[in-house]
Image 1 (cartoon, rainbow, N blue to C red):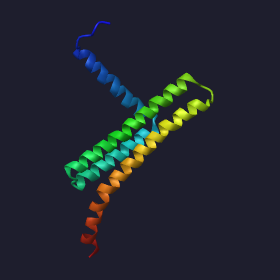
Image 2: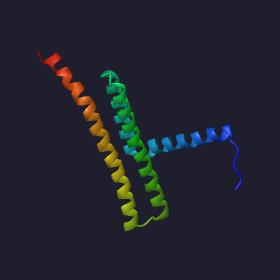
Image 3: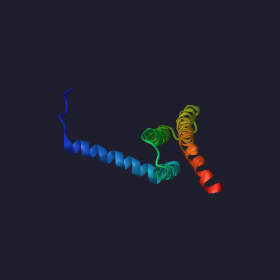
Image 4: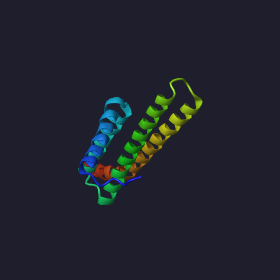
Length: 130
């Protein structure tokens, strides 16, 4: 097989495909929109609470982790639905495992957020309680 040479236009086209995937997920997947809104809220809180660089790393990786799992879950569900229209116990297992990945990533992101934001929010209480 001959090795393709680098093509700038082919790289740009690959980005277009990726953005089409994000657009499709936004338009067709309710949970993707829910995660997007949650991510925006977390980013706003991160700015307001002036979190540290290492906390930014944890927050951004957590958000990315959830989005990656959500996108893979969507891809798996679409492949499963494409290959088998009727009820199938194997397809159900595949979909359930993919959904579990999203759930675990979401719980992990929630725990990271709680570890970062609860101490910062608690530090505000004495200012307003006196």
